[in-house]
Image 1 (cartoon, rainbow, N blue to C red):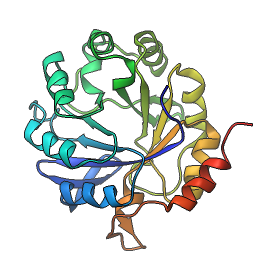
Image 2: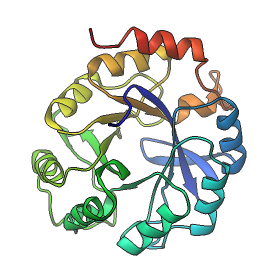
Image 3: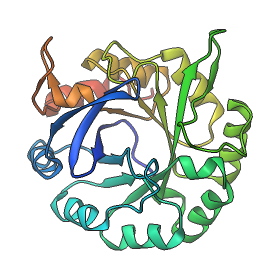
Image 4: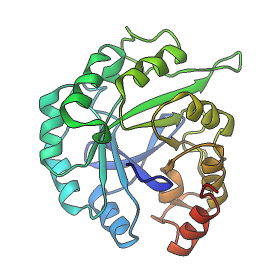
Amino acid sequence: MIETRRIIPALLLRGNGLYKTVKFKNPSYVGDPINAIRIFNEKEVDELMVLDIDATKKKSEPNFDLISDFASECFMPLTYGGGISSLKQAEKIFSLGVEKILVKSVLFSNINFLRELVENFGSSAIVISLDVKKSIFNSYQLFVPKGVENKNFSSLKIYIDEVNDCLPGEVLLNNTDRDGLMNGQDLKLINFISKNFDVPLISLGGIGSIKDIRDSFEAGADAVAAGAFFVYHGPHRAVLITYPKKTEIRNLISSNEPS
């Protein structure tokens, strides 16, 4: 069973560096990934995600050497996403010591790949990423990256139904409208997605405080991921890697345990 109520730093990789985006645009350099992993080791984080945001755009394979370095440095469970499009690639990533892989863009053209991943490596090792934004009519819709051909999903509902049939281990809900803003998550969206998916939900996009994390749990998230909240400090967004203290996490989790 997947442990719930985890608090997960999500790091965005471009080349050999870490970057942070705002609404999936304007990436800003925030540091060296190995250094960040070492700091998160010291802070004893629950889990870590490293997502390569350039691999799919460039149609390149995952950087296996860099992933190997990440896995050897990580003291916590590591999820890697970016550029994964074959079982061979997935197998190699797992062989390097990564606990979970995350897939997204490949599913738009080949949903059967998700089924194959689950069949070969088990549900608990597979996370799918769901990017959602609001339309001009204020309804929720799938966000499809530029350059990605969408052959499978004409609506958010069809996406949800297809993914539920494949039984991945978790779904990462990424709210593109809140990405990098640190102004709180869309709690209605979290509640809606949590009620419609048959698997645990990780919410991402908008976290700016411990209260935001608590609100996300109360809205239905099983785990909460964040990027800017863990790498920026103060109104001028100085780069400073942080993570809640153990006492804060205990208080946060205990206040959200089911009765």
